[in-house]
Amino acid sequence: MRLTSAGRTHVGMKRAHNEDSLRLFREENLFIVADGMGGHASGEVASQMSVETLAEFFRATAEDDEVTWPYKMDKGRKYEENRVITGIKLSNRKIFESASRDSKLKGMGTTIVVVFFVNGGAYVGHVGDSRVYRQRNGKLTQLTEDHSLLNDYIKMKNLTPEEIEAFPHKNVIVRALGMKETVQVDVYHEIPEPGDIYLLCSDGLSGMVNDDNIQRLLGDADLDLDKKAERLIDLANENGGTDNITVILVRYENS
Image 1 (cartoon, helix red, strand yellow):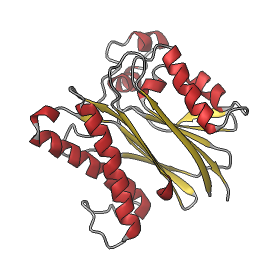
Image 2 (cartoon, rainbow, N blue to C red):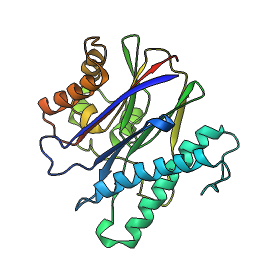
Image 3 (tube, helix red, strand yellow):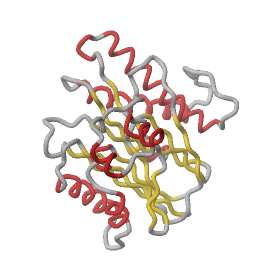
Image 4 (cartoon, helix red, strand yellow):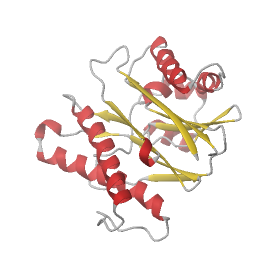
């Protein structure tokens, strides 16, 4: 397995500061994007805490398999899948406890998306409405399902494209790290194929650039991953840049 990767983040055109965080933990083949929320820059605290906590948990469990885990493993899941779930749950608990102790951080939270490549496969874990896409043979597929009020309405009421566009609460998410003491983590496993490109992004990208344009740009053979990431952020800003924008791209190849 050989991975090449690139990451970019940008404050966007409307925000005063960037509450997104990203981590390319190449030693562990672990890639993370988090989109923070909360006033007085506490969203930035939450997103940074989530990526640091998850990366530290992976570092500790990689170096010492006798490390005591903060949660029991689910015996119905594989060891590496449990690592993803436990690391995200630990991040949630740290954010929740920090907000409970410090009134200035009250209400802070963050989304998170993770892709962990291991044993010829990939685990995709997420909470919130940040996304993971996969580009394979020129086709873009969204691998995560938004934990958002809009998505809940789409599933319940089969909204038309016009109703989706007019939906008044597009930014309301129904699941995030830090909202409660415990959190449900969605995990998806798949087998990558040579040439696959994985895109992790905050909604500052997916809300500004439609899937067709993302697919077209990722398929541009004249651009390397760094240029693709840079161009995706440029497109989001050209379309208004109403939020912070964060992008990680990972290309999978056989060794």
